[in-house]
Picture 1 (cartoon, rainbow, N blue to C red):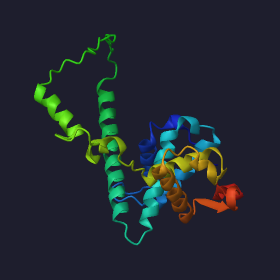
Picture 2: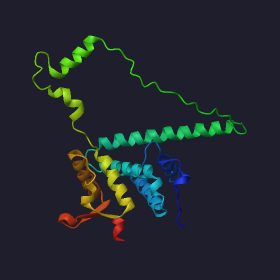
Picture 3: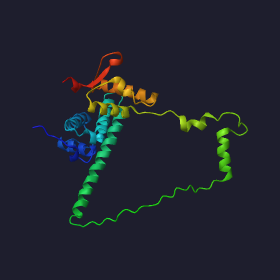
Picture 4: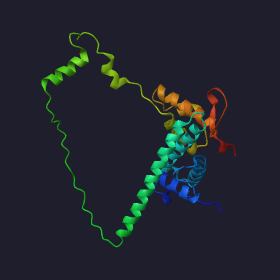
Length: 236
């Protein structure tokens, strides 16, 4: 009989990972990432079949994170994978300790009555009260227009905080693509770029698709404007 999982059974993706580690007797201090990824994806698929994915986006994000760690582990140089793996192991160990402490506190407080004071509304002071010295205002003005060069345009450094290039991580776009495919197993490639805000996001999305295809998580078919991507399960 196949075990069915529900989102309500777990407090979050870390809780689910701990359950899988304990169930399969994995070493939390040296996780077998390939085994953990397959088991986790299987559970997420089960959630999808139970129509629970709308309330479990954090579980999909963790699935994308695990897939990314597995992907970079396959590269000839995988220092990044080791670092990401150690980071995940640290989070799991910390979460496990917190659960143990919470259980101890729960046993200590059994039978207690709790009284909670109602929240009080606090009026926020929206008045800007800082006093600026005149030289601060003068320096800010000269930095913007240039001393003795008020007719020249400001320097490039003045606008860097406003127009500097946005960096979009590929891992974030992998999560975006996987979320799309979890809802619909086959989609047009062009639809992934419709919501892109700038060139950085377009490039990151394209690299995410290539990464997933190389990891054999998706299949690409068609040509021209009819190129589609789908999960391998979509062939079944």
